[in-house]
Picture (spheres, one colour):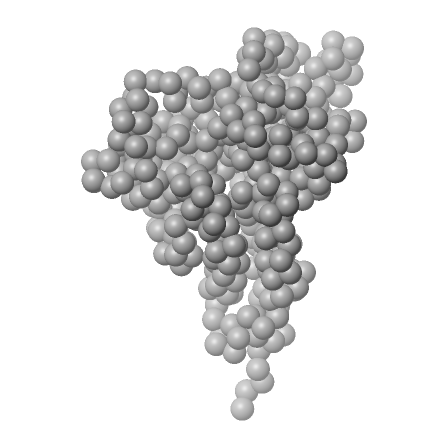
Length: 372
């Protein structure tokens, strides 16, 4: 083991685990990762819960109780997932207190079937915040067109938000604008802005997966030279946008009111292509004030052989722009790629949620007490 995770943390990158399960909580594994691997937060999504609950590990008693009460499958899932998030939040509470609310946070996502419904998303965000009832929760809202006003409204209500499924630079700017508008609403209501936090989850590896697929179809040497360049370029230009927005006059007014910056969070950091080093989206996206949420395999790989050599984003903007322009010149449309990835992202989470509904319903049926 190297001290790569400590070096990453020292560079100002908050290390969050992109996974949660009841077994991870009850076995002491999560507490161990916090204690030994510099983990200071947890993110979840519908796919993570689908995998955890379908494994059955640790959920049997609660499922049996829910079956005995004849609750709906939707209510059962809410009870199970919010229980896990609440317990994880309690384990992370000392980190939350030590970092003045910056870290020690656990994210839980609104029902992905509401991704295109602003009003329902706001209502669901309020309900989840109430159900979990922990100050160190982040409610995840997808960065769809309908999600943007929902972000503003939710932040305006004083609820901290993790904005998810961001792929494009234009959408990322809209997300930051939605956050600032929410803070302005909260300020007008007299809320304490220092208590409101947010991260913007900018997805990384999926961009390379889609762009590289199109590069491979072209097959030219010119195209191959840009393999594995798009995702890092996109993320680095996102950081440039973050620096601009949070260096603006509009932000300065909120800063004076004790508001917190919305940190960029690198999501989808597990490397999908075995041709690339497995710590690529960690080693090459180091900059202060960021979060990197890693699946456990990426966390372990970084701990074992990550190469953390200071800030790897500063001074890269010109090259990043050139790389994205190069991809565009090959006839690969950036706008088309990022819109496809957003659409697919919502569909994948919906599919996972539907799988979770089906598998949980089957368990509730199996465990239902016989009449009489």
